[in-house]
Structures are given as structure tokens and as C-alpha cells.
Picture 1 (cartoon, rainbow, N blue to C red):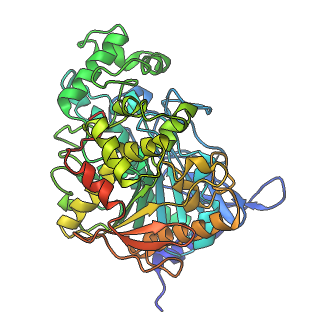
Picture 2 (picture 1 turned 60 degrees about the vertical axis):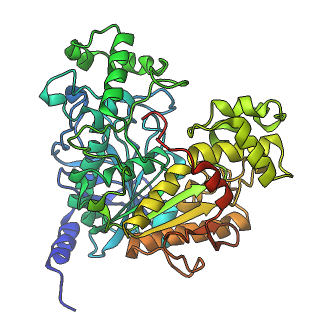
Picture 3 (picture 1 turned 180 degrees about the vertical axis):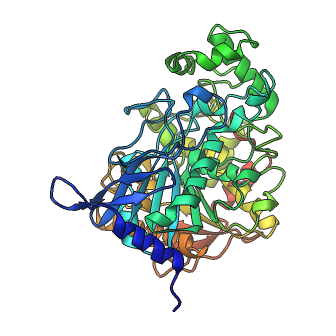
Length: 521
């Protein structure tokens, strides 16, 4: 086998590095990036680097594309997570200087070409970070010999305020700078992941909820082309982005809340970040409920089309894709209210009215569902109807549109429910711990029993196989066939998983008469 000159040089460079020793007397791993060297720590035979800078402080360039990290001298510690983007819901430090990522790897500059799994966190484009214990990549990297990366980027108003129609040319991309941050992170992966034992030519992006939606949106962004090679969206149901007119209405309303006129963009750029965060509590000017919405914008520039409307983007049609959902999605949003588990038949229609995205009469839906599931309680139907009429349609559309253009896609439905609180079922985000193997992490309801480990071993193995080869099939799961029409083959994941054609077909057909647009767009 011929020697790889780059691998030899990388190995020599690693040997030439001064040996760093931690307090326990063990050698601390040091990696060389294009901006400088970073020192991590070894955990369970995995080398962990937290808070690695991939971009410069965004505060001086608020609402504009970020700059790459500036080079540094010496060795910088990468031992703690970097700050999250400013946001309303967090228990961790935040800052506009938030462009940091985290890496878990079995080896450094060892000539190996491991698959790279880049995780994009959820939080509706408004909250979250790559620092959740659920996203710890130690188990995944060790079990499957992969490199895991999680990333922070700008969120809410800092990442998605569309000012192009109000400000100058430098704000043309303002509605998508949060996504451009992710592209900058993927460029960092391309340029640096070989030093962390990964293959820059084999990168899988995956994310849950808003994170999956961002991965889907990147598939329609020309600037992301070539930076990723597989995609997994876990309950990330984006079909449409926000239109520029609606995005401008929201930008104007946000500025008014801050006491600014539409022509006072310069003042908006320099207001303390805390004032912008506080203003996020305002009611959305277009939606019936909730605080103001900021997310990806159809700006006719960096995002020239909707992610999955009117079809699947053909420019990324060659990219293999997994599209997943959970059986009881809305229990994550609505299961925290005990009243929703004790509804009466009289209360049910009114309770449904504000929770549906597809515009259909609640009374009609209750009648159809009672005929379909005669033994179900009002609360059972509440969660089933809201899931099918709010959180499930986007996943179906993505799979259908991929099938229509002959693009490879595999679909799963997680039926395995919460073990520590069974009434929660397979709620939105429940699949995260099963993929990462973080069953005992804060926020997980999987428990650590044999059933949870069995499902973990299936889901994580399929994701790792997909990252490695672009095909999720492996010994841990039944033969998983791609999603095609009209068959709609779906892997229904449970303690014993099975392939099912068109699961919940009757529910899908009930809602098929109404058009779907992502809420808030």
C-alpha cells in the first residue's frame, strides 16, 4: 500500500509537538488547526476538544457574515464549552462572541479517515447550543470510530433578522447569517478535521428539530455545496423558509419594540445585546400566539429558494438523506400541561384549535379520529391530532419530494417511548439520546435499561453506518429500504424494529387535503 505523504507529514508534525501533561500526569492531546494549536483532554480513550474557535467575535459585525478565526500563538486550551449565542432560555454563559465548536475523536493526525458527524442543535432557531449533555460525542466516537463535532452559532435576532430591505448592501445576507455561521463551521471542518483524525471528504450533517431544519436549509444554499456529503434531519420539518415581506414586517416590529425607527439600523447594530434579548419576548406580529419568530429567510441571494418547495432541491439531490420523526412529537410541547392529559370530549375541539398548523375544523378531525381509534381517550386524540396536523406533515413532504426526483432518502418513525415517564411516549427530541448513546444524560427519559440500550444500539449503528457509507443498513437493524412512492417504506424503530409501508396511512390521508406551510413562515 503506497504511503500517504500528507499522513506522514501530519504524523511527523504531531511527533514534533511539545508533550503536554495534565495534572494526573497523562499526556494532554494537542491538535494543530489553521489558526493555531489547541489543547484538549482525554476521556474514556476519546480526545475531547471543547470551545474551539472557528469564527471571530460577531459583535463588531452584527447582522453581517462572520469572519474566520484570527490566528493565535502558542497553545490555547480547549477544555470548556464556548459561550452560546444570546438567547432567552439558557442556563449557560452567552455572548455575541459565540462561534465555537467541539470535537470528539479517537485519534489525532493518525492518517485515519474517519467519518465526520457534525451535529447542529435544535431550539427553533432561537435557543440552545452545542453544549447539551445529550450531545456529548464520547460514546458515539468511541463505539463507532467516528469524529463527532457540535457547533454554536448565532440565533434568533442575532442570526436571522432580515434587514436587507431596510439597510445597506452590507446587510444583504442578514436574514441568514446564522446559517452562514454553520457554513463557516463546515469550512473549518473541511480545512482542519484531518488533524483530528477525520475525513474532510466524508462529512455528515445531522440535527434535531431546528437543527435538522438548518441542515435541510443548507441543502438549498449554494454556498454550502461540497461541504457535506450526507444529511440527517430528526424532526426538522422545514419545507418553507420565511418570505422576505413577512421577515421585513418582523424586523420593523422588532425595531419598534426597541424604540427605533426603520431607518435607525446603525443604532440597532450597537444596542447592548441584552436589550435585543429582552425584546425577543414581544408577541409575534403575524402569528396567533407566541413570541417573535426569527429564522431562515428566502432572500433571493444566499437562500435563493425554499428548502422543499416547490420540490426537493435538485442541486443536493445526489446527497443521501435520512428523514426521521417521533410518534408523539407534540408531547414535548404540550405534555408539560397536566390538563392536556385529562381532557373531556367537550374540551377537545377548543384545545385543538390553537395547536394545528394545517387549517382544518377541529370538530371534523375529532369525528374522523374517534372513528379511527374508538378506544382512544380525548387526551390520546389531542396528542395524535396535533402531531399529525402540526409536526408530522413536513417530514412527509420532504420524503415525498425526494422520492419524486429520485433522490436517495430513508425514513424512520420512532415508536419506542419514554421509559422514565411512559405517558410522554416518543416525544419530540426523544431520539437524541438514543443516537448519541447519552442515555443517562440530563434531559434524557430513555432510562438505562436493556430496552433502551437495544434501541440505542440500533439507532446509533444506523447513523454511524450512514455517516460511513451513505447507506444506513447494518447488522443492528432490519433491511432498511429507501422511501419511494407509493410504497412509503419506513423503519419503525422500537425494541424490535420493523419495516412498515405507509405507517399511520389513515392519519396521513385525513390531513392530505390541507396545504402545509411551516408555522411562522
